[in-house]
Structure formats: structure tokens, C-alpha cells
Image 1 (tube, rainbow, N blue to C red):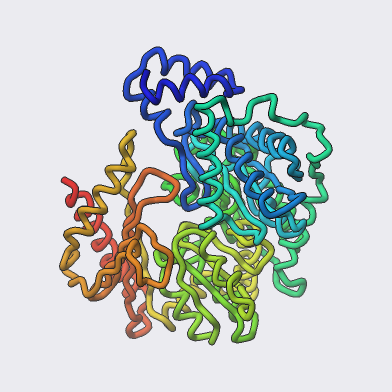
Image 2: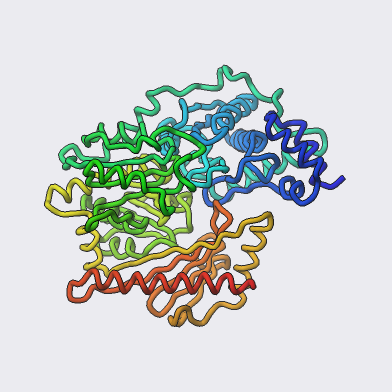
Length: 563
């Protein structure tokens, strides 16, 4: 019997789910590569937690892996705390509620208390609850904007941020120990190891936990700020609607018009191919609603509402802003409305450098980080003399202030709406504000190309492609000479080692990395084009053409390196 088959048979001993048990039995009966792919190895922590398609085996998301993760979190906490508490939240994806309930019962069985939030809720509510209550850790069951078959688990620690080394390695080792010991008699949690669902160590959250977040988030918009704005909104079948509507209303805005077809939480995401507001077509219904209602602004959250997409009127239609454009606009609103050289803004290496120019203009501190909000918040947490006021990543993630230590699509929506309403009251538009930034700092145009690598050997193929690229980096891309190459997997960059390659070009830059949440390679590009003769449109066109050519050529080179 193969190792995969042995693992699968032992998996059956602890799997509480009839559906995945049947799936395992079928895989055992059929054998072959599918069995090996499911039961050799397991899902690991990536950019934002553990994520993957639902199904049987340690290479899929399921109740066995959720229980093992909760047990590892609990055991890690008990090393340093006598009576720790874990805040637990979940979204509306398939079995998210079961993963959360199992986690609370596993923890109680270990002697660890938990606060289980009431019902499917946005990730920012969990992140805020963790800070508000002083819990020692947090578990959020969500796959964020991943494809509909996926689910996932984010783990937070006592600083309110998602885990990074060495804590993530410690928890991973504790998960591995459960699988290893399983071969000698069983260490994965079984039903007998779970406490009853009414165990005294399990506290059920109430509406007050949600209200606490709503009040704090609404407070980010000033009472005297303009709030006259018509908003069209979609939660994309996620869990953002009620919290966002309540927050905007409490802040002083009229209730937004909500896309009826996408208003209710639904983990099957029936109206979109891919529940990511960045994807083409994902905003079609909310844009149609905006036209029908005469909206001034379009807002969209991803399914767990930690990201924000924005579209603004442009000519006779709507323009969806890029993540970098939203980040620059939010940053300018925050920085222009405050003071102090202790203020800190941060973004990732793959995001636009415009934020760096804005920070210099306003005389505030600036930090570059690796990809992911678990890194963006680190400079502020590490430096007690710094006052973190804003951070963002180009993939529609933003954090205004310190209500959470993770990205927050609800508070970002409130602050962006205030900015748009303020511009409207002054007879200006959001596009005018963006053009102001471009006149001051040049048009910073960014672009992204993805190369999807599906299949059971996807990780190996991605690693091979990047290895080939590292071995033979190009001397020029799309006619632009490469001036310098930085491999962030090597020491000496000033940041933790990361699978990221940066090319500085004559006239731009390129960055390549594997996605931390999906089987794909990502190619990021940026060019800066000065505005001449006050002709913003011409500068934007030049920049857009140049960066598109760069990322297209780089993606072709990357794939070609492995052919």
C-alpha cells in the first residue's frame, strides 16, 4: 500500500464529514495520481492563510484540516498563556460555519476559550474584535476572493495581525505533528476530542460585537464632512452588505443602492464566474444599477469585505479605478487631512511608487514591504515612535487608521465616500483629484498580467519557470534595457526572503512572483510619465501603452523561459 493510500485510510478514521469520507473511499478504490495528489503533502500557509479547493485529503480544505489547524493554534497558545482566548469568525462559503464551530469545540477540548462571532460576517469585524477584546489569537474562516470551490483559514496573533515567521512555522509544525503521530495511533482531533457546543469555554457573540465595529468604522468620517452622495453597491454575494450599509448610514450617508441579485450571502456566487471585483464583468450589475439610480459612486466588496473596488463617472460611462489609484487617492485624503511627521504610510514592493512620492511631499514616513497585509502592518507594529495612518496593496486592499491590523474594505469605503462627497461639494470630481496627483508627481501607470498554472504539479512548474528566469534574466524587455535585477529570495535586501524578482528598467520596472493564494504567476509593471503642457490625457495614454507592452513582453519571456 502506498504512503498516500495509508494516509487516506487513516484519514477515514477521523473524518466527520460523510461527503469527504465518500470521496476518500472512491479515491482509494480508484488509486492512481488523484489519490497521490490529495494525500501526499498538505496545504500550507501562504500570503493570507491556508486556502484551497474543498475536498478530501490534506491537500484540500475540509473539516479535518480545519480541526488540525485549530488544535495547532491552541497548543501554540498554551505554551505561553495559561488561559488564552481565540476570537473566531467566518464568511458564507460552503462549510465555513462548520469549520468555525469545529474550531471552537477543538479549542475548548484543549482548555482554550473562544469568542465565536454571530453568523457570517466580514473579516474586518473579526480583526477588530481581536484587538478590542485583547484575545490572544484569531481564526477567520474565509477564502476571501478565491474561486467558488475554495475555502480557507486566516490565523491572527495577539498583535492583531496575521501570523508571520516564526509563529506561522510553529503552527505549521504543530499541524505536521498531528499528521505524523496519526500514523502511530492517531493525533488528529476526532469527535471524541471536541467539547460540546455549549461548553462554558465557548462564548457566543452577539449583535453588540458587530455594533462595536460599525460605530468605530463610521467614526472615521467626520461629523462636519459632506455626506451628500448617491452610492451604488454590491457585496458580490458576500457578507459585506449589512455591515457596510449600517456603517455608511451611521456615518451620515444615505443608504446605498444595493444590487438585489448579489445582496444575500451565497457561497455559490451564482451571478459571477469569479467572485473577485477585479475580474472583468464582476461589476456589470452594480454599474447598471448605478446608471439606473443616478449614482455618484460605485463601491464593491469582495466576499469577505476586506477589499474594496471603486468605479467613478467618466464621460458617458464608468471607470473602474485600479488598486493603486484608489490607494493613492485614499492616502492623499488621509495625509492632507492630518498632521505630524510621525505619521507612517506603507505599501508593498509590487504596488505603485506614487505613495512614496506622496509621503515625501507631505513629510511623513514611508515603508516598503513584502506582499500581504501581514507585512504591511509590520513597520507600524515594530516602531513605537511611528503612527500608522494608512497602508495599501495594489490588489484592492486598504487600511485607514488602526481599527484593525489587517485590510478593511468597510472603513476604506467610508473614507473614500467622504472624499468623493467632499469633492462633489466643492464642484469637483474624484477624477479631478487623481489628475491633481498626476500633475504633481507624474502619471504612475501600473499593470498586472497573470499566468495561471493549473494541475497537480502547478507549484513545481511555477518554481521551475522562476528558476529558469533567475538563471537567464533578460537584458532588455520590450526595448527597455534592464538596469538592475534584485532577487528578494537572496539575503541583503533588507526584507525577509521572498520569492520575488524585481527588474529596474530604463523607463519603468517589472516584478515577478507566484501568487500566495492561487496557482498563478504574477507580472507587475509600472512606468512614470510626466504631464507636459497640462495634457494629462496624453501622459496617461503614453504611460498606459508603455506599461502594457512591458507586462505583456515580460509574461511571454517568463513562460518562454520554461519552454
